[in-house]
Image 1: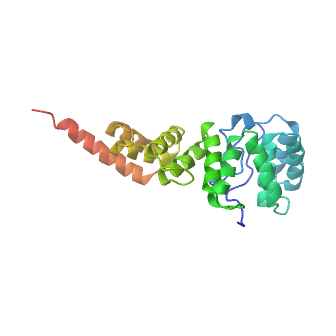
Image 2 (image 1 turned 30 degrees about the horizontal axis):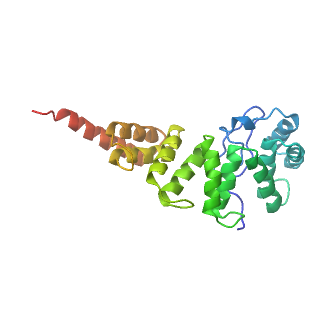
Image 3 (image 1 turned 180 degrees about the vertical axis):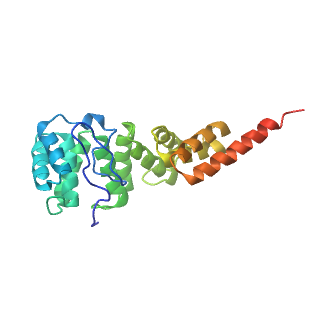
Length: 237
């Protein structure tokens, strides 16, 4: 249960939250629009963090977090968990992350769930992960929607349910996730599990994933394009 939370680095600007790389990015997620802060202390902390003044940022995030600013709670937690501007403090980091999650910050909920899904800093608990993924997914958090879909597909942390898996894959796909676009395309290609087979729709989802650089999706798009073209050319006599 030791280690650094992968990708957790505060990467925010004063007026908007930006998504950092990594499955558990520490930035205030761009979708969590209510987390944007006009709190002067949080804005100052953001500026200091981005300037590399980690000690100052840590203190400023803490002050704002103690006043209940959920963006500050989240960013302060991430700095504690990753030992940025301070030695790693897992217990305090988890405490502040939970506060941000309880304050209904979708990205905090996702990261908290991911922690339990991976067994990072806590014992692995897919049921607890599922609970937090669901909270974040219901707010439109795309990564959480994908994680939830994977759980339903695998029967991890919940009963296996391909119909529910499809529901959440499609939501994540509509939110722009490349993996979800490919999987949603595959559901429409084969049909079943409450999904009507539709090669045209499948082709569209593969095209969306291919446009983001998925080589397997590009191949599927080409295959379905050829198949649909052949079907159109073979007309009933």
